[in-house]
Image (cartoon, rainbow, N blue to C red; front, side, top):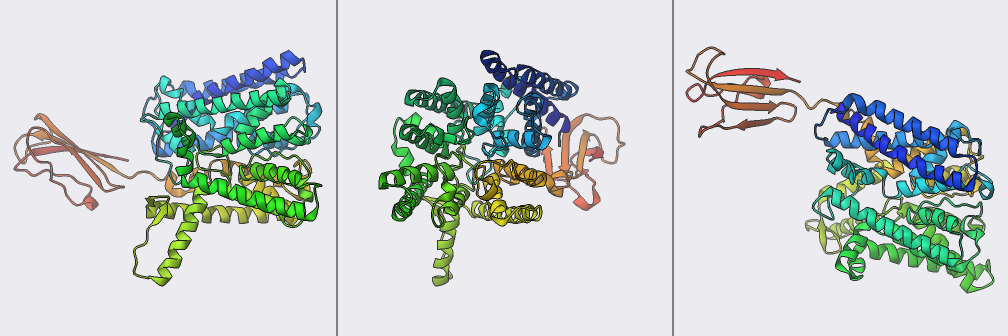
Length: 556
């Protein structure tokens, strides 16, 4: 593992991230809310730490390995939560403890949207903007943003992009170069954000509210400027705009790119994950509307449909906006809202949850097992649309789900053990690991009354959810930190058999990596390089009749 390379990249990323402290300074100065010094200090701290990490390793230009990418992704997200909490701790308003500031910052960056703050209506404008900005930067992944810029600094990016977007189809690329892919995704992301902001502004929001809620909506985050969330506006038009852009944020940005490039909308419906996403939303909305209308919870069927559609889209896309007291809905509807967040949005979107494509593959795998009971000898592939899915992908999905459930169970036991009631513990953990926001019980609107131990568990769950479990979990694996093995190098010199180890002309170089049992040779002239001794002896000897003598060395 190239730790100096990792240190250099982390330093560059932190220096880049320090610049994001400046827009809140401008907002603070414009509104005169007195919070500017906190953001200036945070800018200086993050920049200094970035320089301190980068300067000692700035000359190391080696290529990143896959393990380096995973380490950078995990450490950078953990570090971002720490440094993003700095302005919240330094700001005179609101007064926050360390755990509360860290919780709020991580919730913003992971687009979870859970909050520990009360009285949002009266908070300084710069703090409200900063929370929305955290959502927007975290929406598509700050590392993907950096991949579009770091190549200019001489840094490759495929490993970073791969570790930032784990999933069944993570190896597919939109364009031949990862830099172009990242730029294309962010142009689409920026375009949707601008369109959302303008739509909110047209619908009656102030420009400031439109910007903040536009950031939160497209990022499927959920931070709002008011305690009542979107319900503060009490506007069917604003709720309709929110539904549209929450769905756009929950759809794969790969599809957005392909649809934009092909100038057609048929691309969407041809995608099996998109079809499943839309059909599930329609189904749960119809059920919710029927239950609300039958119970008379709202005076008209139209109002029942309005609130059912808004909340089911909000929860399934893991945005977490609310427009009414959903926890007071009849029957099992409040729990259903929490459960649909486990489905989540499409892979490659800004949504959290387990992703629709994984549920599709699990369903198709279940159908295959039923068919195998009837036809045990049949070779029945798992399909996604018209494509046959490899067994490796299916195994990966099963592994993800098992680990997801195991982590959920362990953390749920810790939350209940910390003193939370079972409803609050389950919904708080579901809200955190699915990056969704609101819950039930004590966490319907805020996590203020949750104990500190439970908050730390929820913070860890948010990061696990954002990095889709394995990117962070792999750091706890002994295999990740294990050395690659022994590397044996041999230099062959021309000469007569039995000659000494000096003299002659170097005509061939060999290297053997014992940890993976790989042997490489670079032939010179027209001769063969097939002379090897058993790996257990850790020796290399070319045929005497062909090469003569060999200088050898071994290194770990």
